Image (cartoon, rainbow, N blue to C red):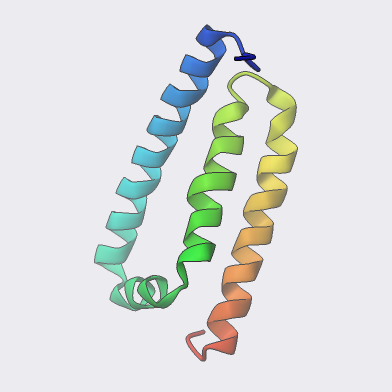
Length: 95
């Protein structure tokens, strides 16, 4: 098996991802508690859009702990996913 990253880098990224996911979950929970309409919109959002955030955007941000240059692609992906979600909300009549 070929290691792409040294094990210490992998551990840093995994811990960074876990922390980012936990922070995102806590912030999302607090926001949904404060704004039930956002919760309803998010629950209606197809899983592929949610997966883009959890499986593409968050890992890119976690990767910035090792490679700072990933910040620009992470920000670009975040804006792209947000735009896709808003477009879907509008087409579904939820925005």
